[in-house]
Image (cartoon, rainbow, N blue to C red; front, side, top):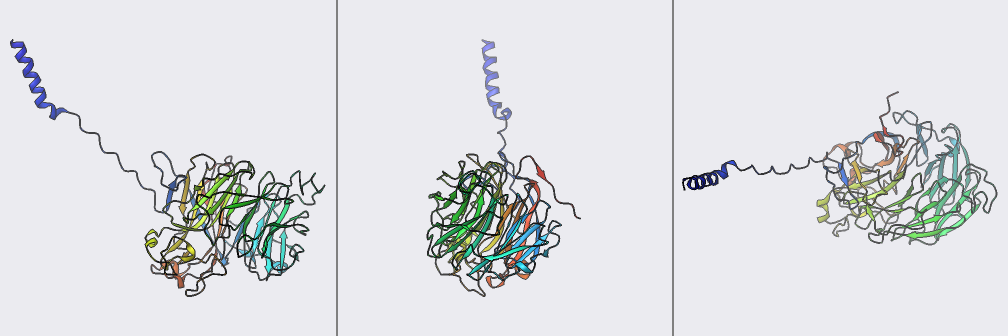
Length: 494
């Protein structure tokens, strides 16, 4: 009996002390440290990813001012490391990693133009400077010695006048169509040269067999796209010879050729988000295995992508969002690719989410369309990387690169429908550019509309943002888009 009383007493004592000796509750989970301001790590829906599961890339970028007006710029880098920035009538060259720039246009190719275009052939290093003279003819100039000397020829592919929105690119010959073994038995130049422009009735594309000296073969490839004619984006050619041209249409579409431009077919995609009008320049990039990545600004004003792994025959119909959801307005998306899944994209964007509750410049509720942006919206330059863009759930690493706005207020996206607010808001024109060099380093060309006091004042207005300074950002340190290269380091000062 005494033993039982003792046992009960011990149980009662232990029960009375249970609250004193029980384990402390587990600590509340620590909040994830935020990324630095201007850095984003997102999934295929544009939403943030957990930093405990994903690590952001270590990306840094270097700025260079070209020192000349540079709206609608093109950029390319030869194997010597010289950067070529082409806009308006000038070809600007830097052979010291952007520390200095010089005009190497030469007298033969220095013409006033409305639609300049530049291209560096990654195979032959031939530099093309395409200049439009009015709407009647074009000058296609090229250099094989890093811009020291130029050869030029005035023509517009032997067609009737009124050519506009000119584009040029190069790519491999195929074994069919205009390629070797196809309709023609020989190619005069190592690569095929493609030249496209729009007329009032559609998009015309031509193929050159002599490196761009003449364009005798080609014609209409796509009918009237919009009431503005056959406006289109850049030409892209894959390693397997597939050629892509993107028309301006409401549903994202790509025009494709497998035979060096002899025949063309079109494929649509992205019906889930569509393309808002006015838009002129979606773009396709292809990687070293000829996978294709088509990007555009969707109806919710974010940057979207569709992928093709069979040379443009079929495309995903469910779009992937590249830009972070925090970026509520985007324009001028451009893309390039290295090895499979390794891509880089640039665009102008705004995070002024509070302005979505305000009226646009027409007095209507603003929906994020840059063409109608309120006066207090600021646009910055963004660069996005993905090293697994072919995965079902790709990861996107985005950096707001410019420390101050590139544009304050609206950006005119339609040459026939601009708003004059203290000077035309069409100062940036239609597009920027992005390309990689031979080691997979990314280079971005853009026009900066907000310079000097506009960039430093906290109360800058659209009237202050009417510049178009030619500018470049390139990767300082971070991963190459070619996997075998690994991480790239900053250039040493010369």
